[in-house]
Length: 337
Image (cartoon, rainbow, N blue to C red; front, side, top):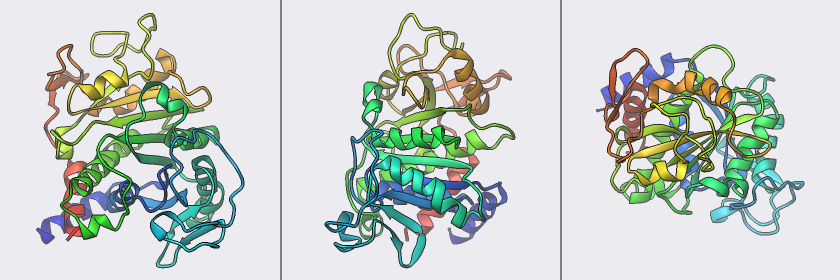
């Protein structure tokens, strides 16, 4: 197992890694974001984490100056009276900001990225995975989505991940209780996050249009315990039968993300305007579709679709693991013990 994990790590590190700022709204010490941090690093990316000092869920795009800690950080990870911004003494890539998710993302982009990325801005910002889905109008109050919007407004391509399974638990549970449902789900979602980031960023050129971000929601892992069980489906945030979306899977009216995640092991992928947090036009959807169509599947009306036909006419079964997902899962399994 160790040998195969080593080979998997060599495969991952042979791919071009990106400089990534990782943020969220659940706090810097929650298990989901730390699992995502581990997975992105295992995939060869250079990651700096910049998250709120405590849970700031549901704060949307709120912003305020960071302040000295009036109480302890999340899960007692830093004492009362700690500075407004701080880091893990054993790993300065792990940072907290005692403010809102938007402020954490901004601090990561403007202050931490130049420090860790040789004076450069990040290539990409990942927000989440959030504890719980952010579907439909919930995007308006989601701090996870708000942080992704802040990145897009600053000219940095971004994505917001949200996950149905999981709870507000410390990252220490990933090691103290590695076989719990929460820990297993965190690693599954983390592997999916890496797969999507790799697909979106692998091609040369502009990753996302200006002021545009992507909202990805993962369904429950109850019936989808492994990353290979999942498929990505292009969707829209708000239901609008009169809208003309990009033509995909034989229609110009994409399914809503809420409908997608109800169908089983399908993750919704919605492209949205970072200023309005609403769906974009068909041309903008098409731009993103061109970058990620290799990992997308069609959602049948029955919700039982198990494959799709790609542009070259080759059927791609949604239960087939990609090399990236397999490699990340293998490396993380060894890291877990």
